[in-house]
Image 1 (spheres, rainbow, N blue to C red):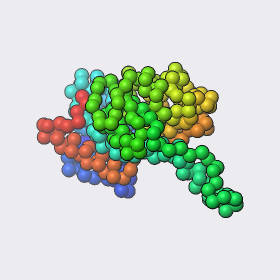
Image 2 (cartoon, helix red, strand yellow):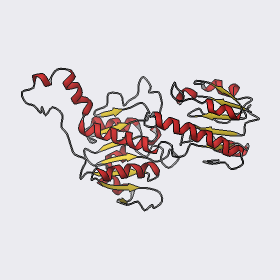
Image 3 (cartoon, rainbow, N blue to C red):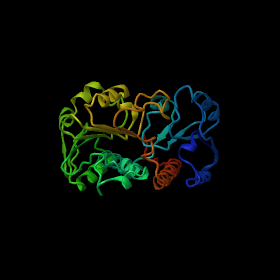
Length: 315
């Protein structure tokens, strides 16, 4: 059996190896295939393991032996699920491997916005504290999280993990989810109510037809003056131009973003240089422990599929 990894370098490094997959057959690792290289690279593959490689009718057109696609990810919007169903290709994602990591990054971003650790460190490194007339220079305004209202969009495993952390900070937690879920300490409300009440809106829903461009100029306008917008989900849930305008106008107090429409960031990305906008390069899921866990899930998914008991099946 031939197993082709199309974008291995998005997961594998000197600390995380895909060598364990060799027990299932011949493993061919490609660091990062260009779109027009994929079809030929997987022509004789029995299995494809990918992260963000676009798997559609064009890239899979010659892959007559292909029966399994495993994802180095939870999201699967890069896979043409309809095509896979028509051609008997099983698709398995990596489940909730990154729950704790994404929740941690969400609060790292929120804390950076309110505590300004990087800015104060730079103030010290620039020698300005040495010249300060007081032991506590109030250069950048700081705010407590306690008492603030956190609005969570998407109350799945990550949303619930974020809620748990927020409650530990003595925050009020409200959430919007398509179906009702009973979560201790969390009040589930409508989308419009969440926008009006939340001091911080954080997105943890999948990217689909219902969530694409969910946060546009009208949505941002309904958020509280000075609110913080956080997106560690998918870039496609927000209209970047509208977010930039909401920031530069002063309506939003800030944004913390780990994902964009196009990644890596384009040269002319409209959010570069936007007011009070913190951007990290899609690394919420990437701690070492998280990637090791991910590789183990991918390995288990293949084993279970071959044993006739597939897990984490999305198609």
